[in-house]
Image 1: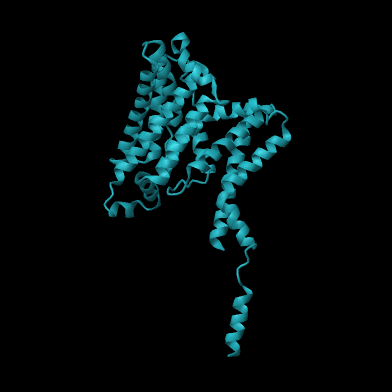
Image 2: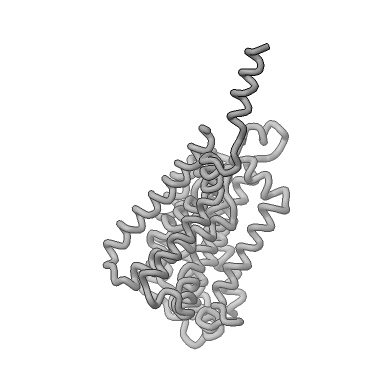
Length: 337
């Protein structure tokens, strides 16, 4: 009897404490993306007098809008356990095609945009087909598509920028004006974000995309056509990347074939900083947007501090690694305890 009572005392002494270190670790691990975003925002506000000005905040949102649009497609791809390295080049092709359709072919702007997005979807469909049907590694497939899309952009533009001019005045007005004080391209990115949230939260397609990344074989054995869903997310990614290129053309009034160089790294980094797993099955649209803003704030703050461009790449890379390390570290500790 005394042994039992001793065990009871030992058990009761280890009752969970709601304010324990483990609870703190779990909280940080769950909300690490938001915490990282707030810390970087506070640091930028403290060290720069112009960071919080409305003009600068609008500039940050305007510059991150294309990355936000493309990151929604990348999130869907990564949720299935894939990767899309072609988003930057497809964005450049979308930028060039938009300007070319308007300036050189006199197409109406809605038709030009529709054809541009369709071209991006077509390239995404090729990547999705090779990945889902022929089981080729996504890294290799999209690396090849990255080269193809950039080459097409250079061929169409002949290596020179294509100016939209007066024919695309409506497009440039969209890219340079605001609605309710918010840049138009930011509102477009917000619309894409809300649609992505709807897909992931309220549709069978979104739930199955996440399930495929968690356990593809189990989904396949349940009778679901896994290949179709994998194919679809690459089509979406290609279309959204081309749309991001259209936004760049609208903002600058120029279709440039060098747009989006390195953009794929920023997009992937935003999704990963947002807590998505490169193994698939975990990630949210809200956290991905926070990851996009974190990258945008870092770049903007370094510009305000006159940090040279080459140094910015090093600083951004270090911050990305630290952010991901914090996430995986807290997540690992929470699981171990």
